[in-house]
Image 1 (cartoon, rainbow, N blue to C red):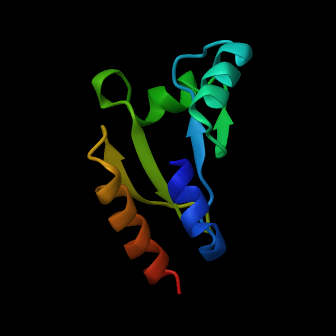
Image 2: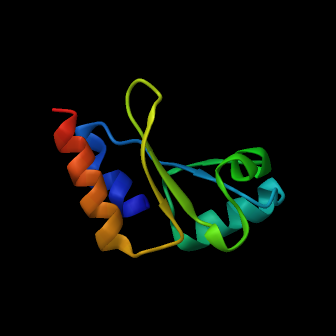
Image 3: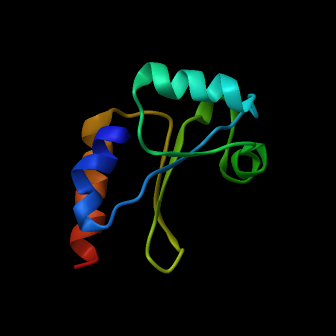
Length: 95
């Protein structure tokens, strides 16, 4: 997600990862630092996860337009090619 965020930042893409299991902040910070992630994270995301899916469906990727409307989703991880393809298509629609 960090690579996607960096690649499409100039096009207006923002990435927010929701930490779905309510781990402690220092545990998440250690993971983020170890993986060299630079996109934003939301802590205590169990409510968001409950609303959009949990369990074997994690991760859930939501594409939200500038008006706050969820315009596409991806359940589970299909790979970076799928994420990039959907991101490019949705950014193209917004131009």
